[in-house]
Each structure stands twice: as C-alpha cells, then as structure tokens.
Image (cartoon, rainbow, N blue to C red; front, side, top):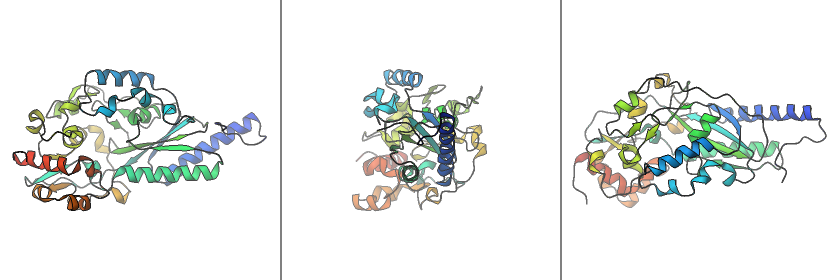
Length: 330
C-alpha cells in the first residue's frame, strides 16, 4: 500500500504543511494518552548502535539471555520487524513514585519499575490507543506497537528521537524525569515530520553509578556486564542458584536493583507519576521473604497477576528469597 501521506490534490507545499500538522497532532494525542515525552524519527538502520551491540555480544555480556544474540540485525532495523515502517514514534512515560524501601531484613527490596501494574500492559495499551486514533484520522494507516519485548533497541531509539541520552549506567536519562521512564515505540507506514535535535550527554566526569555498583557490573562507562548485574541475576537468570559473586553482594535486593539510578544526580529532578497503575501494590516495594517461600503455583499466579514480577517465575522468586536469607537451595 502507499507508504507516504498524501492529501488529495494538495500542492507539495500544502502537503508538507498537512504532514507537519498531522505530526503535531500525533504528538498532542500521545501526550493526552499520558506520555510525557514524544519524538518522531525516520525508520532506518541503527548502524553505530548495532556495532556496539555486536561488540557487547562478543564479550558475552548478555549472559544466558540467548535471545539477545538471536538475529541481532533484526534489532538494528525496524523495517525488518515491520516492513512497511517509515516512521518511528518514540514515547516515554514517567513511572516514579515517592515511596521508599523499608529497612527490614525480613523483606527484600523490589526495583521501582515493578511496584505497580506491568508496564508492558500499561504502555502497550496507551500505544494501541494512539494507533487507533491515527488510523481513524488517516485511512490506510498501519502500525506496530513495541514495548520492550519486541526486538527493538528502545534506548537507542529514544536517544535518537531526542528524548534523552544514554547514561554511563546504560539507562536513558531525561532532563525532566531522570531515568525513571518507560520507553515504547509505534512503527508507522507514514512519512511524518521528523525531530533532528538530540540531547547531549550530560554525564560529564561523574562516575557515581560506576562506583556505587556493589558487583562492579558497569565494567566501563556505558557498558554493563549482565553476568555481574543484580537485576539480571534476580530476574533473567534461570539458574537454580544465584552465582556467589552476585549473591554475596545483593545488599537486600530481591527483584531487580536500582542502585545505579538511585545515586544518579539527574534523578534529583524526579517527579511523581500521574499514572495510578504505577503506584505500589501491597507488598511490592518490599516483598516478604517468608511469604514468597510459602507460595504455591496457584497463590503465586494470584499474587503476581498483572505484575512485571512474574517475569522471574515462582522458582526464580523463591531462589532469590533463599539467597537473601542465606538458605540452601531446594
């Protein structure tokens, strides 16, 4: 089908004006859906970012996340994911809530991103609503929603779209909300007006995130070795036990880890989210370790329904609880 926007018999100048206006309205609609930052860039190949990904994979820094090494070229070009893609609408939403972790050895700390409802569902629903609006406005418009689980280099696209820059801890940092943002993309078969201003790297000489990591997972600025990362070990790793170098330095983290974000000076600009679904569920900022160990498959499914914490599965959560309590494996 026709990939670019055309508006009947309009002149080229009038058509450009219509494209500009549609792009503005798409951003406006994205903001009305709750997204705090929106950028639009052409769908193309991420050549430099792809080279860095290949180098990272070559060092085996992806650990046992085999899907990261599968078809890396797919991650570098959204047109391989959605062949009709012409534009990438990149969005970010603030998820910060002012709740703090409780200092209690009977519980384990949970990464802030997993306190509320699963962000895949929340962000995905908002992007689907945005796509539906676009399709109503432009007959023939097609698109694909991407939220983390699709093979997209989310942070790279966010940086390219001018939403922020990728910090030394490898998280996207925005000047308005720090790094407490979820990212998503909407691939469209439409030519739009594109943003071409990128945000400069403002990390400067700061090394707080590198210095604070208890497992030295940030091997150098902008490079994380997943094998040493607490988040990887407590969420993605499927081994029956957490490797001792990480297990000995969990510092109370049960699911994920926010240390590198907590120390980042840019997160002093944090603002409370307006999205109620990101507010902490009971027991999700700090999880009771004994409660987790008592969970059955049925009670686990009920306890974590609609939560990002189900990613680790029951076996992983109970493994993490044992590690924090220094109990032998089952």
